[in-house]
Every structure is written in structure tokens, then in C-alpha cells.
Image (cartoon, rainbow, N blue to C red; front, side):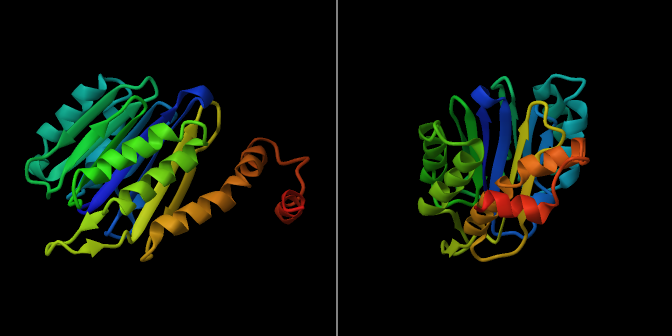
Length: 234
């Protein structure tokens, strides 16, 4: 989607990979971000076509990631309007920013993350996002990703056609962990303060992720969800 910034990040110590994304557009979680099990995080943004990300995710299982990205974009006659980033759980990074995506556009590659965006206030948005992610290495991956979005917003975030600040009206957080049956996938589809709402939603959901994993694998001896919540809130 246009007017978008995203952070793709790794936590190698805990075998986790994930991404967080925020934009002026609505329902970003349904169109831009993807996880391929715990192996790859992908975002396909700017003038978004969800098929691009899905095609890359399909090809990436049997082809080199760079080849998968390039083959997909070469078939797209509007690739100059697209922006794509891929991060592998081994730390490999692949990026495409089309020449016709809106300024400021670009990406920052760091040791364990990619910060990428378009229609931004300036480059400091991405610089601050990557810096925040790397400096918060002692925190959980979810907190690092969300704090990175907050840093991007604080640095100026997205700008409109006339240069005015535009709010992040939707956001999404996805995290995959090795050996977990499903990822964390939290979305705010419409809000004028979606990053803060995403942060709150993650804080509340994270208390229950272990419960939901246990319920999917063996519900027989689990207490009811309301009882579980009472216990963790003691």
C-alpha cells in the first residue's frame, strides 16, 4: 500500500522471525505482510497487489528467494510501482523498490532487520526504525517490532500529497516461532491511532498465546479460557 512503513526482523536466540507494518491505507494485514512458516517474512507494498506476495511465497519454497522475487516482478507490468522486502531466518535480505513509488522511498538493511517504506517524511523514518530494532535486542521480538513502528512514527511517519502528516490507520504484527503450530497474527484494520492499538492488542494477546497453542495441540486437560485468564491476572 502507498504511505507505508514496515520492519522485518529476526530474533535468532529464540528462533523467531516476524514483521510489523503500518499505513494510512485500511486493512493492511489482509494485503501486504506474509510469513512462510518460520522461514521467511515478506512484505509487498506501495501500490499493492496481494498476488505478488502470494506468488513469491509459493515460489520461494522451491527457488532461490531473489529469483522468486525477480521472476514474479518481471511478470508484473507495474513493478515500478511496487515495493517488496524478503527476510529469511538465516538473515538473508532481498529488496525491490520501484522507481515510481512515492518519495521518500527506500530501505535500510541492518544486521537483523529490514526497514522499508514509501511516501515517508524522510529517510530518518527508516533509520530510526532500524536503530530502534537493533538497540532493543534484550526485549521480545514483538516489542522490538512494535517499538520500531513507534520510532518511525515519531520520526515523521507518512506524509500526504501536500506534505502534511497522515495517521497510520491500519497496522499488523506477525511473528513465527520454530515448532509452534501457528504464528502470532494481530491486526488493526481501521483506527487513527493504529500503532498504539496494535501495541495494546499484542500485550493482551501475548498473555494467551501459550494457551491457544496448548489448546490446539491437546485441549483435554486445559481449563476454560476465562479460568486461565483469571489465573494469569492474579
